[in-house]
Image 1 (cartoon, rainbow, N blue to C red):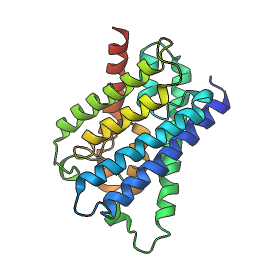
Image 2 (image 1 turned 180 degrees about the vertical axis):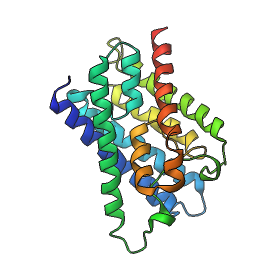
Image 3 (image 1 turned 60 degrees about the vertical axis):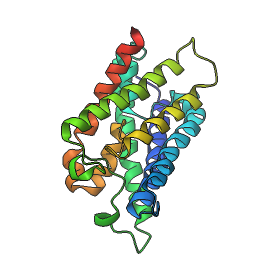
Image 4 (image 1 turned 120 degrees about the horizontal axis):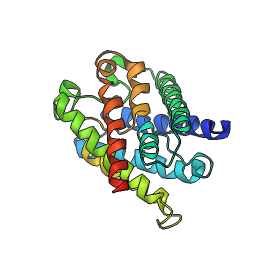
Length: 231
């Protein structure tokens, strides 16, 4: 089993990711702060996710490796770079952190008199009518598998012993920005079950009924990434 410091780092890191990045998504799309340019909102949110991850990699990476994402941990397990028991403990800490971060963010948002959960939501992912481009359920599953595989593949290669030392944080952060740039109009971009589950529990309704896809597909994507990494 991993040390409590590693699990605490994963818990706090995932909570910070949700508070900051999902917070920006909520402000941008919930309140439509992108003005007349939806693309500006996509870029803003993508940068928020990528930049906070860069900061977290350098902050808690030396402690836990900074997975802050069950799909990343799944990739490490499938690639044989992490024991199953340790990986499960990481996932539990990440999911708990994602939920805690979502409720903390919701509490922060409720301090504004113009915030209404039913209207602004909390940056939840979705498909069908919950997708900006109305992608189907099957399409959303494919999209999340592919985008997660790309992201986790970068993580696995960037953290390999043969990779350029010290550059992993930037590569991983840029990879998260990249998948969000294409994924936000499609599904909102999960590629992280903990990031999706927390907001879905807070918002409920459609987000909660659809969240299974944003748990299963990213985990499958993590396995695909591990297979590519091992080839």
